[in-house]
Length: 218
Image (tube, rainbow, N blue to C red; front, top):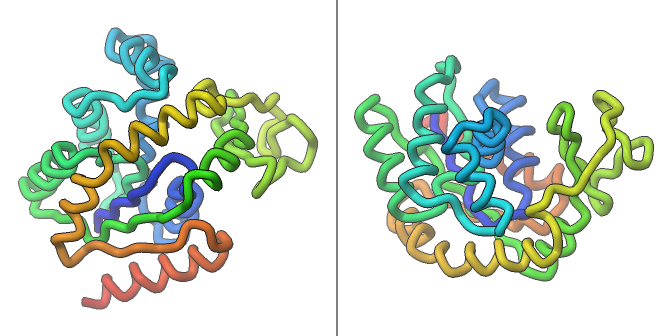
């Protein structure tokens, strides 16, 4: 099963994708993680992605699609995957559909996480990540047990460059400018669902689990 989680940065897609993937033994494919892998590898593509992301801009369709679809082809998880942060444009969604169709697969659900802009800015500005293991913490919703240190590996937490308040505002503006055609693309299908991303994490998790289990029974 292929699931697509939609919504602006900070809407909670990553947290919920990670929880659901663990519960259902699915692969969690976060486009941000895939891009950061390319950046860390310091390939020409990775350096290009780094310049774009650090400015709060979206990675161009052709580049994003190539990176993510190549990653999907390398997955070894027959039970399916959750896409978090991809597709972000109508063109990417169409490319994903063509890719899945060739493999006789399809998107089982496209879930939109709705959160107001003010809440998103506050959330993202409070987000910190471990540069060693990649674990993400939030000073509002998930504080580390020891201030400034990762719970998993004791790495020193740092704010990502793209979570600086000024960059966050730019990211949200870019998202709002490009999201409507993508949402219209999925709203026309029978796989579109919407959740309130401002509700508590446990409640959203239960709602998503019920949704996916229902789809599996069809």
